Amino acid sequence: MTATSTPADLAGAVRILRPLLAERLLLTQDPGFPAARQVWNAAVAHQPAAIARCATVAEISAAVRTARDAGTPLSVRAGGHDWAGRALRDGGLVIDLTGMRDVTVDAPARTATVQGGAITADLLAATTPYGLATATGVVRAVGLAGLTTVGGYGPLIGRYGLALDNLLGATVVLADGTTVVAGPDDDTELWWALRGGGGNFGVVTELRYRLHEVPSILTGMLMFPFEQAAAVLSGHAELMADAPDELSVMTGFLPGPEGRPLAFLCPFWCGDLAAGEQAIARLRALGHPIVDQIGPMPYEAALSMFDRSMVDGNHYLLRTRWLPDVPAPAVDALVTAANEISSPVSALILNRFHGAAARVDPSATAFAQRSPHTVLEVIAAWPPGQPVEPHRAWADAVATSLDELSLPGGYPNLLGPDDEDRSRDSYGANLSRLLAAKRHYDPDNSFASATPSLLG
Figure 1 (cartoon, one colour):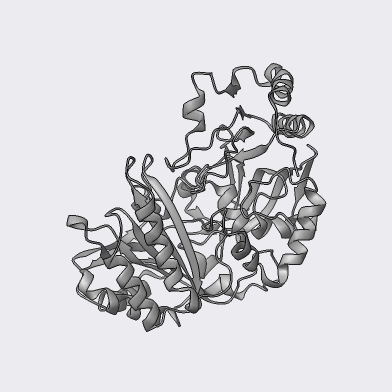
Figure 2 (cartoon, one colour):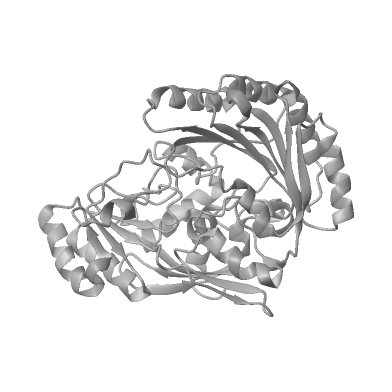
């Protein structure tokens, strides 16, 4: 375990890094520090001692070695969209990659190479002019490194799998400061561990993705009165049980007028548009939508629908469960939860894991849960100034109400720092191999704040 930092340790680290980074090494008294410390979840109050805004792999290597030698706690900020704020360690040194967001597209080869600080919007801005895309999450502000190395549920999951299923290779700075390439032909054990094991093994400075032809996608929002929620959720579960790869559908509850949530269906059809219209007609028939906005659009535009769903400055707390399916008791629990929601800006989101993602051998990557299932996101959100207790109690109650219907584990990107046991359960038979990789690549647990937490 990395030693606890002392003022002398930090002073020594600053003396080494200042000539290299100059004004890009920010200390707590510097004018730019508060803005650099801020992450999207305003509830995160962690206070690092220094932020190293790196611009090159060499600078990252130097920062890693310096923190290790000084015994200073280390964390890595890429996209900074982890709700628990694990990119920031109290009293530690943050390796900040937010200035490293370049994207290079090789359209004939259908590949894209991105730097470690790139977010989803950066990748899509570069690939959309070519009619290309890869599997991503649904929020454009999410960092690609954190999303991909832990999983990457998203709109193209049925057709093209998880984000990590489209990763072709990665460059990583290890805990000793050395730089390695991981891929099918290079350091294959690290390559296996990175696809599901998250940032536990080093700083991911570059990722290379497989791209697909996605000139447009049929998508939009169907919103239904609360009274039709049970029928919508039950019908969604039935339709998704044998859904084609081309169709992914998010459902659940989103904020509605007058503080009362509305049930929603958000389909994503990646394929023949006429067939997609037929599939969406079946979804539309599950109730009487009061909002019906479906149409073809570029993939980048489709994701922009969610840009306002995670508002910077709000406070957030998440819970999650994996459900093998969504039977009537689960629907009842979710409808009750929505009716008792603690904040008008909170949400419940269900996303089905199926198709291409479910046909991958569970042992092929560290991400082990390859059976068809539904991931539940319990998103408690509230404006600053309100006490956290009512919102935590609501989120905990929702998750607990579904425990008996849930699979072991859960999606580590949504689990919190107190969910270490559940996080480990997520890896099933892959856990022992993943822990061995952690001991090999990061024996002193320099990357202790990574998602998921692998302390064994």
